[in-house]
Image (cartoon, rainbow, N blue to C red; front, side, top):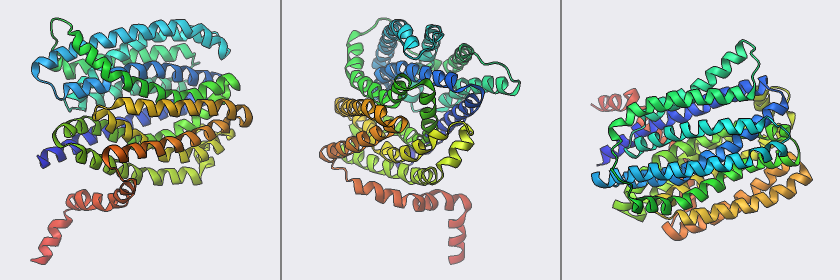
Length: 454
């Protein structure tokens, strides 16, 4: 059992780390080129468009993903068929609702951000939304079966293809109309979905009829994860949206540059969350609270060990990083980067809090906490941005994150007896353990030590 668990963590961790590195490299590469190809206004509009469409993507993912993975990973063959059919039905219904909402708000957002071509961008995006929904659903099925290879390949196709399109435009000095960027996303989603289907076609076993009891069960579980996901993404995107409305699209673009730079900080949390969730769901059923407590403290400690050196560099040299990433046209981003680094220290605690509570079947608690946090932050953003400009959005995030992290630790202490000090102990032990468990055996140092004793 121990060897099997260790193999799971090594294999899934490798694939998930590579997937997140792809996301970082291709996403950062596309951003790096676009910030140089587009003027401040058009770049800001693209930022606002992506922020809005990310909300739709998150709504679908939050409602379906965790519930589907949790129920499929603990299902019998008969239950598997019915859960899978119910999940596709629920996903389709949710996508229809999101498309209707998208059509309803497109014109309003175009007027709000003073870019009339934005409405057409939202209309065409509906096709991308459907295609990416199919791709995401197939990826969740693979993840529920504790496999990650197809996800690695298809994410590379979807994001790498878009990067290649932007790169060609950059190298050959083609004029980039924002609408063409959406067409490129569409093409990549079509190819990615076809490839992902090949990876999971043997796992696509459906029942003949929709079992609405499972639809209700998935919805009952997913509604709180949905609310949590929406609240979290609103926290990340409404800052930029409000900057676009209260100041300008260029201000939203400048703030987004800081967020892009700090996306590096999310990689350890994303990797750990993707791996920990299916494993913690199983261990909670078989081993109970003690195993979940250990998973939380250990995973947060490991993330902190990786995260802190990166954040320290960004805090000390924000001007250098902004210049390298975005050129010399965004000096207003430098103080934003230095302050927003501090907010990233809360990321591993918050991300793993949600992961652990979801796996325990208590997404409602996570939803309430995030909803309160979002409400506090949005109220603060409204007043502080009007008073301090872009930096006011960072002040709002700092205050809201501090209060939210404190509340999460109180809840974890009550539910699992989690000790926040243990996370720092595990963080301090991370690199010595990494060296002793993996580096020394890989270098054959243990064999040489035994030979010298003989």
